[in-house]
Length: 399
Image 1: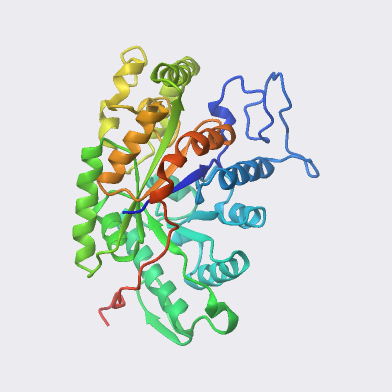
Image 2: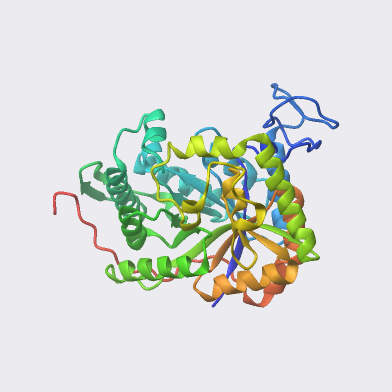
């Protein structure tokens, strides 16, 4: 069973997680004194945050990553724009752009994607998201409730596929209608992007079961991951699908020795507690309506009650990042050999795509590329879509 490795681009900034870092990483920083070249945005700056993201993207490609996940947040850079800019600075790297169906009409998404695919040699991957917080959705103008957002997303993908594979597509649903549109001419040569999605609610799982090539997860205990994979596979079978695959997002703190890796993780932990990020994380959690991960139920908002070692939920699997508010929340912490062993363990239960990154993203792309990825050379394969499984389209009126 093959596997592939992508990294992650921090579109919401990363210097807020790097106390005392003097390097110029663009203008996503808290300000204040610095011993190095920290930039402030101004039109005409020679080095912007997009330039820093370009450095990470090129480092990822140099070090053998197959692609990069564009993290989407209302307070961050817009993913589709960034991946369009960076695609011309790289040669082979795929870009996973996260967006919500609320952001685009199906036709606009189809036309943009087809143009992007033709310009880059089919290096676009879609990550269809639907928001983890009703409150945050309302802030951006989306007032549909949770399950309605997934119903809308299902129609969105039905119409996207209809437009992509037909020159004369007709559809009438609750959210979308189409009367004869579709890709024509040279745009027909583009490949439909691979489809990723995430979310653990019943609605999210059903959407993934029907439409996703890859179902993405944040890391938990391997037993929790295995259980979720089994559930998604069973749901996909109802659509006659046996080809759905699975991805895992997890940070990496790997060093020559276990002790050195733990010391680095503890540095992050101690600095986060000292800065009060535990209380900030707790306040933000009140906005979230998505399911808590298994380990998050054990979080205490009193930073005096839990110690660094309390957050190891499995050998080398540390959830302290989540406790101090650093996304995605879980990290592999240990020697290079032990981190490789944990990746193999997750791969053994069904994970085919790993999103690996560390802080700072630029330097850690080299570390992971030099010390972790070479162990998997013989198993890797570029992401492709299997032969299509026919999916019957239904409008919401049952037609």
